[in-house]
Amino acid sequence: MKKPDIRAGVQYTAPKYYDIAFNMFRGLECEFLEGCFKKHAAGPVRRVLDIACGTGPHLLRLAARGYEMTGLDLSTENLAYVRNRAEKSGLKVELVQADMTDFDLGAPFDAAMCLQDSQGHLLTNEQILAWDHLSHAGFINGTYTCAGAAESSTTTPVNPYAVRLQLIYDGVYGITSGGATRHNLKTGAQIPVEILAEVDRKIDDGAPYTGAFQFSAYQGNAAAAPTEGAAAAPACTSGNTTAAVWNATNGSTNCGGASLF
Image (tube, rainbow, N blue to C red; front, side):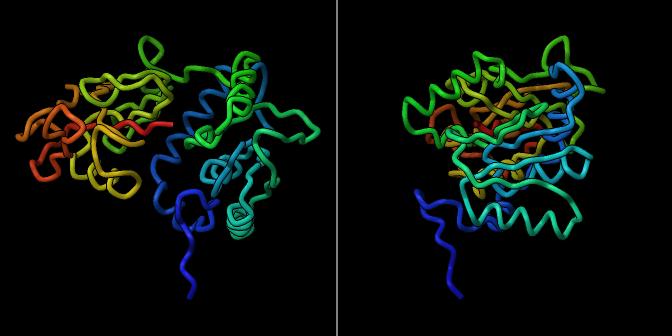
């Protein structure tokens, strides 16, 4: 059996493995997306475009909720994988193979989304400016959050420990919440440290202060914010430098992470 080529720089040729590695919080994220549709769309949302849809974790879930979904992706393997999953589930979706920086579908959509660090594949100034143009036109909002006064038990998704998530554009993550400003999804508190350590090891570099998954002190509606920088519980990380590690064996049950986009 030929092993899939998953080296950096190779298009996503192993969608099954990608789907397994990143299959977290997808249902909650779809609840958040539906909340955004209701709150920010000019009218009812039925037709939705998923740009760089990948293996279709959001596309298929939203299709199952009754939305007319179109997925756009550059990878032949991804689209074949999504098509097979849709057929097995009895879902009707439209799939288009195209470059997300240069496409014309010939029809309007009620909403569009681009998730999971897909913008990180924009490697030239011209490509980045194309998304900047969409932002200024109102197609891509700079901040997506239900934090602060707008946060409530009925409008904000929660993690498996009943603590609210936060999808936002800020730098409040990493060492003493001093990260670079970027879109990120915070898991909320009360997650056992060993779970976050294992998630980080599987999907990123395994370190709490580097890479695309980092420590977050976001409290949400929890009784206390996650802490960091000491070996003993309740601290989630061993120190306050990039050399620190997750305290995977100290038994802390009040930790949080941020997935960076």
